[in-house]
Picture 1 (tube, rainbow, N blue to C red):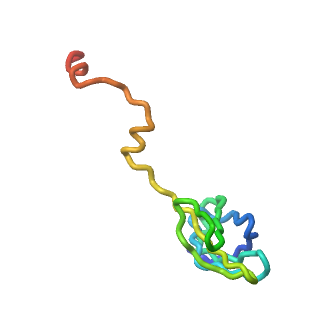
Picture 2: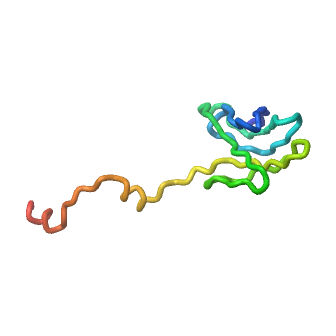
Length: 111
């Protein structure tokens, strides 16, 4: 059964441990430089470390992120993201893995 859990993380180090199934539902800045996040979890899944990259307006961003929420901390505006895991394509995997160079003709000769 899924549940909603609350976590608090520092804006400068937005890392928390939660079940691997965690989906961030909302982020608020209830106290200076501390983010309060509400996460949908399956308590039965394995616990893992999650990172929520936080960027200020106009700051350079990293790739593979999905916007979660925008919060205000006194005079600062923070944009909170979740890291999106990108599945490796078969083509990329084939390029990365060493391949045996056996041609069709070589295989036919062995028969």
